[in-house]
Image 1: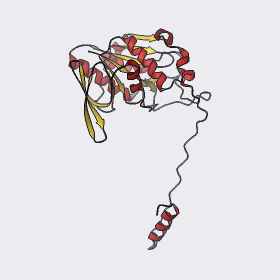
Image 2 (image 1 turned 180 degrees about the vertical axis):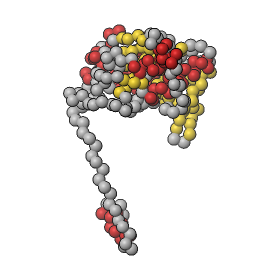
Image 3 (image 1 turned 180 degrees about the horizontal axis):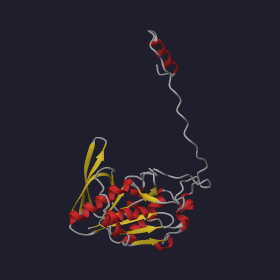
Image 4 (image 1 turned 90 degrees about the vertical axis):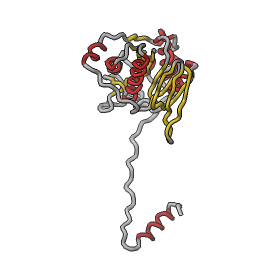
Length: 260
């Protein structure tokens, strides 16, 4: 069984850096780490391959400056290889542009029985990329998976909901987004870390994927960040001390707010 996992490399949340003053976006020119949200997808993929008795896990990622720090972590966990898309023209790419790039990278990775993603990235939180990838690849999509099992040519998913979970079945191949915390990601062993250094990472440019640079990045997104400001400090609430007449003060306060 061959599983492709989309992983994002992000600035370390413990030291996220600063905003670029010209673009007003997060600087990504330093060391990047594996998004914790994606570590669950990697672990789920490894478990599915083990349960199938064979196959491999391939990573696909998009990152600047040929960054592979986060990929090496996932490779050390047990993934076999990776496809990295790194191109200066990708700066400023929105969610749809990201999905276009990842879809092409998935196709380049070879035939996949299953594509796993996180529900959303820790530094973006759009939550739309998995479904966009599925649409671009013309594949069925199942979201918020808390448990995944493969039975022949069918994937069975327990899909997490506010009231519990739904049992969903889909033909393979399919795109499934995994909810954080559903499995315990393995800690890379020393042997795995050393082996990861020699595992292949296929680094490609947009041209290698047949993608027009004008369809992604700032040009493709057609957006501009005009201002970034700190959130306003929350004002202190009104404290009413009970001196025997507090109820009257509360009624007056609620009346001023037009609540009563």
